[in-house]
Length: 455
Image (tube, rainbow, N blue to C red; front, side, top):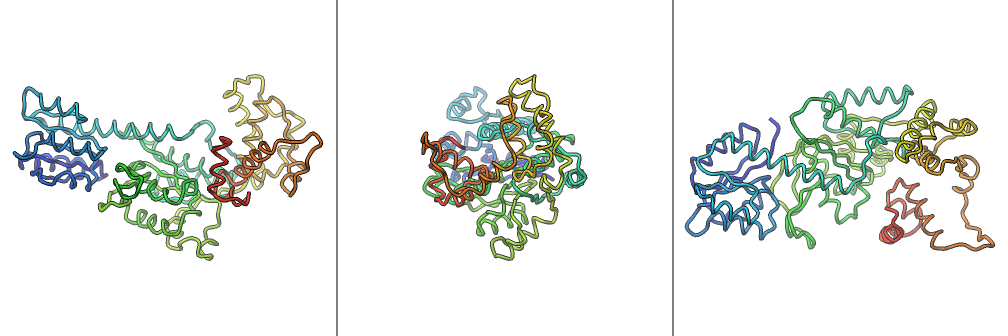
């Protein structure tokens, strides 16, 4: 049975907590039961529950209000539901003011308890989803998997089968800009959104394995407990926990540090995560999709990627061919993006590519693949003219090693900004790679990207 969450129960009535525990376990919850409040706060925090059921009237020395107050002082983030036998509910109201999520008056119906727990956990998941979406930019229409070539049809057929079978680990490879993230989203949609489900929200979490500094990526992936490192002021769920019940996309997996690769392998094998500095293994039910533009088999030979992780990831492998190998998809993609951007920018007069540009478009090799095509067409729609030349000037720009100072002069700041922008585009917005292209340090690039607002 799918694990629906971890519930910590504290009540000095052993009969009540044992009865509740049995009922919740039948519903798919993992529980931990205690009947004494002595030294309970560290136990609650260490176990990392999703919700706490806490009796107000406990030992003579400490009551539930005291426990709640200590939890809040420790910045314990999970919701707490108070249990009370006080008909006036005065204590429960006091608990609500201290931050309790809800309260239940004894004697209570077990079904009522289940409903309250389910409602609060669903609300928590929804809040986490909103917080995540605020940090990301998403446009479903721009993420359609478009193509009529046999190569794309074969890939989508395999993707459909993997989604239907519920494959829990999938590797997607291909050059930058071919649509690896788009295919990952397609698999997620086919796996969850096209099938009936009782869940209101099915997570889809994206992690760029090279976009985060080395000292943060482990915490972002697996979470951390309070004080596990200098800036860890509170407990924090990692991306794997946030993706529980859904899908996590590990973008640029080929650039993941070797030490983290071993931890990822453990997660894939055991389907459990342990927060940084934590002592408890948390079960997860998540589909892991990894993408990379690297040749992982070559990386394995070069000792840059773990062989055991590669074999685990590549059990289900989808390779997206570059756009130059499926030119029959270019006209379809062109019409798709023009119509998409015409609607986005309210350009109803633009419906198709200028006739004098069709031959150039359809014969161009598109080294940046679908992403390059998309960017060119977006500029075309916004500017209402096809100023971009796709042949000699672009090649000359790529091969040029020096900047010729024009007689009218130039702005060094604008040149620097443009070079950084070009490097970010060529590196598929991988800041580590962009820094190497520019011959500067990663920290310097991060400063310049922030300075010029190029994120």
